[in-house]
Picture 1: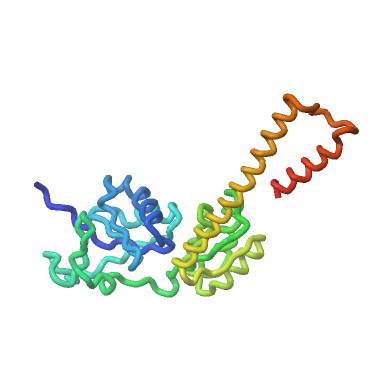
Picture 2 (picture 1 turned 30 degrees about the vertical axis):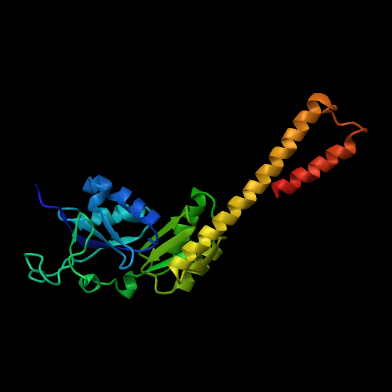
Amino acid sequence: MSEPAVLEPRLTVSGATCQGCVRKIRAALVPLTGDEGLVQVDLEHKTIALPEGIDSAEAAKRVTEAGYPAEPIPEAPAGHHHADHGEGHAAFTKSGVPTSEDLASEVEKPTDADSAVTLSVSGATCASCVNTIEKAMRSVPGVTHAHMNLADNTASATGARDSQALVRAIESAGYGAKVIEDEDAAAERRDAEDKAQYRSLMVKMSVSLGLGIALMVWGMGFGSMMVGPENQLTWINLGILTLGVMV
């Protein structure tokens, strides 16, 4: 039986906050690894562990395109690690169990120039909005990469030292933006907003369905669907109710 593949931290990643993010990252890297089990995402340390032989630059590109800015971790100088993956070497097996508790000390943290800023964006509804926002972020001096994730209404930029400059750039493009200080809290807030929107849509759908059924029954056996002096007030009231549902 062949030994399990050894996974080592090869990428730093930002914007990943939940298991849904982990699934998206794994799906983006499967074409390179051939197996989701060969992709280990550490949300706490914001790293991605991969087996040897994987092109880190290509992997970082795929993860970034999936909506999570990623950068390859510079390789340590020769002799820095023990050849037998001994004590102090932060490696992962395919099962995802770390062989060292000192992962953070093994991974080089990005410098200020390479650090990512994540923002919450409002008002974006289509691909054209995404392109406009990304272009606005790239116009900020120092930005090396900009990406807008329309699915969760967040935008990330790497290389920017002034986060407020990013906010102003997005606002000048016609959208709302604010810096996300706590990604976990922001994710919870987005979930709450999504649930509130879902409840609102369900209420509107129920009212619309009730109006539709009532109109159908009335038109089939209780009155004319034509607007006339005798039913003009009824149609006006129905119009007002319809506008209320649409709003």
